[in-house]
Image 1: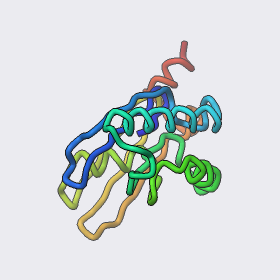
Image 2: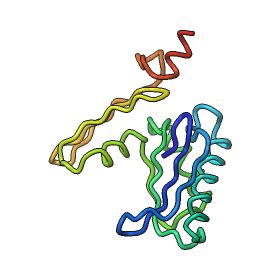
Image 3: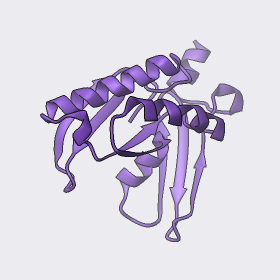
Length: 153
C-alpha cells in the first residue's frame, strides 16, 4: 500500500497469516518522483520479506495498491518500474482506493472513501462492475485532504 505519506508492505501466506511487515516513506510517484517512490516500495517490501525469513525469489504474488495510479498514463509508467523491482513472480497494480474497497467489505456491493493526503472514492456492485472517482488534486476539486490543508496554509 503505497500512499502519499507512507508505504506499508505486508507479506502473508496463502491462508492470510501475516508473516512480515515493512514500512517505508511515500510510494506515490507524483510526489517525490518515480525513483524515490520505487525505492520506498522496494525497501518496505524487502523489509517484510526479511522479517518473514524469506527470499525475494520465494514470493509468488504481489498486489501494489498505489496512490497516484490514477490514469492510463500513470499505469503506463508505473508498470515497467514495478516489473524492474522483481519482487514477486506475478503481480498486479491498482489505485490504493481499490485495496480499501476489497479489504473493507466482503459484500459484493460496497463503497469506500479514502481521505488521506488526497481524496478518492470507489464502488463495486454484485455484478463486479466498479467505479472510481480519483482525486486529481485541488484543481479538480480534491478538497479536504492533507494536501488541501497544506494548500490553504
